[in-house]
Length: 120
Image (tube, rainbow, N blue to C red):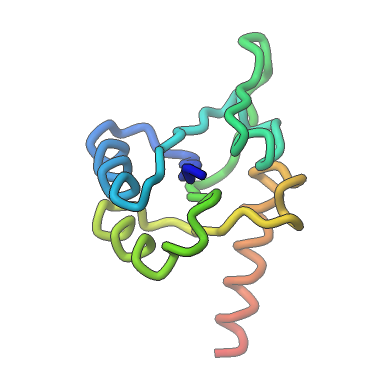
């Protein structure tokens, strides 16, 4: 199965191309998700769905990357993405979060990061 990297909140072509080059050696493809598609679930986005043209844009409030079907490459892919300039919260698509919207996942990632900082 080919994996997909869902990329949210990025609009600069050099960074997008660098992310695409970083994910390709791992058998993945890049899908840049625009604001109109942020109302869909992560599972829908991973399956290649896109919002209808008349869908209202959803403000995500930040940048995020979601690895879909790339689980076994996480240890090597994360540093490659960081080198490519993808310096945002990252997550793996799971059975639990596949029904979440991108906004819900980003909020959860921020909560987790805050909790870790408090403990550390």
